[in-house]
Image 1 (cartoon, helix red, strand yellow):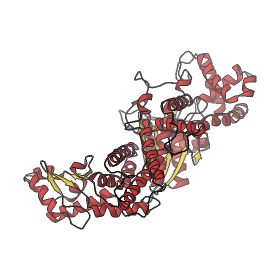
Image 2 (cartoon, helix red, strand yellow; image 1 turned 135 degrees about the vertical axis):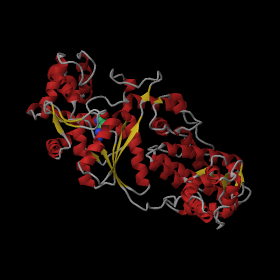
Image 3 (cartoon, helix red, strand yellow; image 1 turned 30 degrees about the horizontal axis):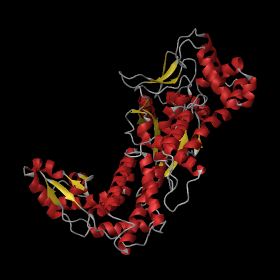
Image 4 (spheres, protein in one colour; image 1 turned 45 degrees about the vertical axis):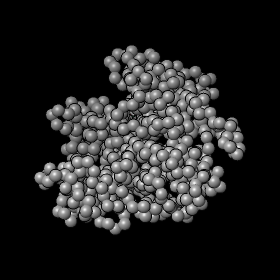
Length: 583
Ligand code: ARG
């Protein structure tokens, strides 16, 4: 059980005894950012006082007197207009820290109900340069997959590649008309990328599918796509030839980001099922013919969903419906999670609704939506121009380069081996990539955010770099003390309030994970890291470790440092960010 749950249970008992609404009182418990006001706080008395027609302070005093004194919580303190300041007893903090220190998984408990989540993320459209926009889905989805796995759930990760779309018509046209044979021989990936950009220069309007008919190059590209979808032998052969090159391109990015998938199943995978999906929907009267097309209607004010176009082509929605069905049958998941940008909200709303009408009831379907990445001008970053600075790789290169110049490691700590150039390069890679990921994950996912190098690589503040330094500092103290792995069996002795507060923040680990999982929000984890790093730094300033007054105190404090390092590392790893032993 998480810390907050234990406290809520006790508050619920108190409320029950007094005949107060139990759920309301329990839900009002929150972790407290300022140790001066307790470890946790409950503010139910304010609303309750109004409801019961009693002064809130009296309600709070009654609650305080009824909280079970079973050695877990100290007697609560009534503050201000009726806040309850809650503090754990020293014994409870020490007991649970010792348990955590001895446990290989930081005393995380197995979930009561084990879920199986299919997480669909990244899912770029291949055959065009992958860009910053894909970054968010990739980083977010990967962090969510790691989070749920750490919590003991089963996770299936799936990359729903756009590998069957109009971009292949562009490549096919380019290949047939503008190919540089020699270039294709030496570097096919690069030549295909060039063709993609080159062909589009011949479009009258720079949009993939839209644009008026009568734009000759675009029309020719459309025809190539249509031929591919109809099974044209030559186009299919070329598609098969292109695919490994396209995959090589995106796999390079995944390797660098440390992201893997259980299954790569692009849109092409579902092609064989589409006709059947459409037929079933029509038969069940979920879809109906309309001007030669097949559509699903929703209400007067909502655009219909297109299942089959007039020319017989199936759509993005049809593919997603086939995919829901296939994933449900294949994995029997409790949840299917789509990590896709908010602009596709309507699409998913409709797909989920059609799936429901179609009788798919097993899994809960979630659209984990996110906002755009904006450039310094406040506009969404675009990659139409194919400029290096806006491709994913160009961006990661730049992050690593900047990390190398901003965080050049010192000669090596006192008494330690100097840092080698290879080590320095590893530091730059981990710091650069970590900074990009953290900047993304620390945002509320539904808002847009501005890309800002200085902020994301800053050494202080809520950044990956700061957390990586905090980790390395912990590790360095442990090495200097001659206990590189801490003192896991040490008795925890809590003297200073800073020590107790760090203890409580460490114990909030499980609760932070649960709370981030609740609504698919990794920024809850970065907020937790920030609390932890601050608590550690205050502890470190006030509680000497290497110069502790005696050995018992020192061992206790070393155990706290080791636990801080382990929690930092675990949470950073959930976020897909590497830690370094020294930097
Ligand atoms: N390829 C799509 C795009 O980049 C995203 C796919 C998301 N997943 C899905 N099942 N529709 O816009």
